[in-house]
Length: 239
Ligand code: NDP
Image 1: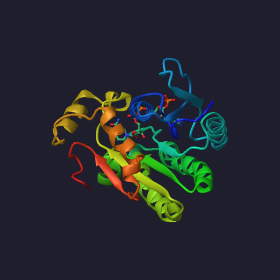
Image 2: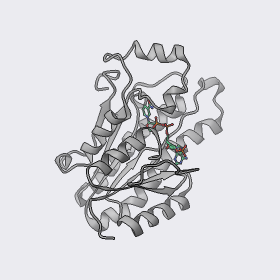
Image 3: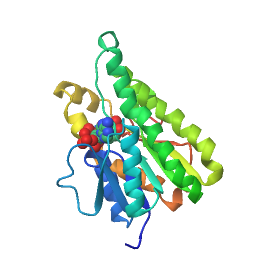
Image 4: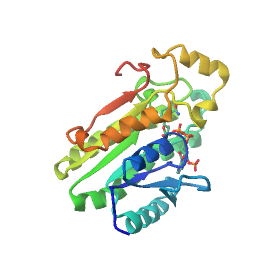
């Protein structure tokens, strides 16, 4: 197959924000692969599903190899896969802390490292990390998740410094509350409390996060690196 468009990989691109990001890149003509863990049924046909648990380095290597064979080396990496496991500090087990950090932060290191191989050869590439407003503001009951999301900022800015001379940019998007499975799992009272704190008075749609991500992946964002772009309805007020 002759490659048209860039090779884009979105981790956790089988649902929620990741799926909206993947579809937005595909709509502009890129070749987009998405990772999934269990099943890829029902995914739009234009997306290439690759099985991968981002806590497993070997699975990541296999997924990148598959993408490289089908679409060529990854030119745009979106590290989006993430999960939470909320509870108060006093009740949080060490396992709960390290699992959340592993899936949200260590996983980003794993995919960035694997992607950098091809990007260094190509002397160019884009890495975009999906953090969260709570990484910068903190959040009661989310010591593990907020720490991991804050860590992504230091990770991205260090990558930006290390790889900038090779034409590789690394940026962070920090969404506020987005209408997905993750926030649908919140109790109604907590959802109402959050809404009251958002100047725009509503949750974001996944497409609104995708718009910032595709911009960071576009030619017009070529001089943007090490940035943290909030898409949070004013919740963090630019942090
Ligand atoms: P969802 O819970 O809807 O989807 C999470 C995605 O991450 C799924 O594709 C899931 O795959 C994948 N995933 C989770 N753990 C792993 C893993 N170990 N290996 C591979 N894939 C994994 O979440 P959202 O779409 O809401 O969130 C996407 C990103 O945005 C996350 O990083 C989240 O922290 C962040 N975010 C979300 C906000 C929100 O309000 N929703 C706000 C701020 C940030 P699978 O289907 O296999 O479970």
